Image 1 (cartoon, rainbow, N blue to C red):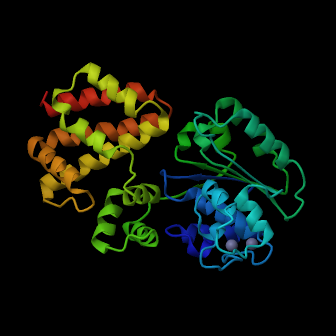
Image 2 (tube, rainbow, N blue to C red):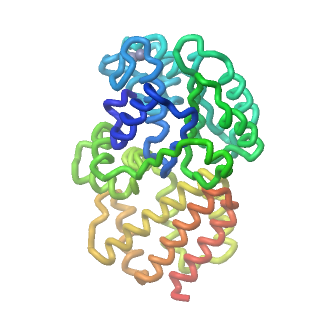
Image 3 (cartoon, helix red, strand yellow):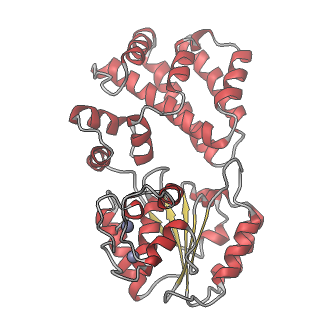
Length: 359
Ligand SMILES: [Zn+2]
Ligand SMILES: [Zn+2]
């Protein structure tokens, strides 16, 4: 994505690009909440630095549906760039190589699907590649996404590179949990903090995603808690198990430990699912609280969800809702910092049951 069209963090992106071109730090840590676009900015910077036709803020390809320019995520770009039915694209070969993960001077690593950590072998290969002089660009760049999933051995392996980086190397680590990184690693990087996105930016992202009804866009923007990823998932209706969690919430008053265990097993078995679902619970309950206190309507929800939310609001005390929200926010943080997701979930449903019964 061109920096000129990065929504929400344009100022940060422009400032960083100017810095990278004149006097780059060798290692950056992009920190901030999940789904606010840190990795998009990182990838945009790589394009801006390595594009061979129009390096800088704008993008070399202006074709209406350029898969490289428009796709926010590397994985998705990879899929679409290989699609023979894709509209003609005029990207320079360096930008295509960056997007498809084969540029000789750019390495992108992240936690492999289904794994809880970035693998040490991925890190070793990245370190080895950073040591080689760049062959196409003036610099060699690496993005380490999901950096909170670097185990201690992987972080220690990176220390030397961070301490004495090759002059041509620029590393960008992207994380939603700075505290999961060792102090020794963190202190060797320049930290750039990304705030949650403003509602206006989320509305613009939703509009670009095809949400044309403004009332719905602003309702979704509020629900998304500053995250573009949440906003888009909500708009697509494939927000993870909203219906099931809402059902479980409706019966949480009578929950026992066995039921808490089975919910934990079903929806909170791994870190990603658990973090997402705790966030979802917090969002649903915040909506319930707003409805109860302010009589705001549930514009963003389908009718069957709406009626469940209304009956939750009617049957629960403000205090109980607030307790549940607070516990869900704390559980999300704990899970992101590697606490056992299932235990956090068992604990949360137990707390919710007590709170809802007024105990
Ligand atoms: Zn280009
Ligand atoms: Zn293109």
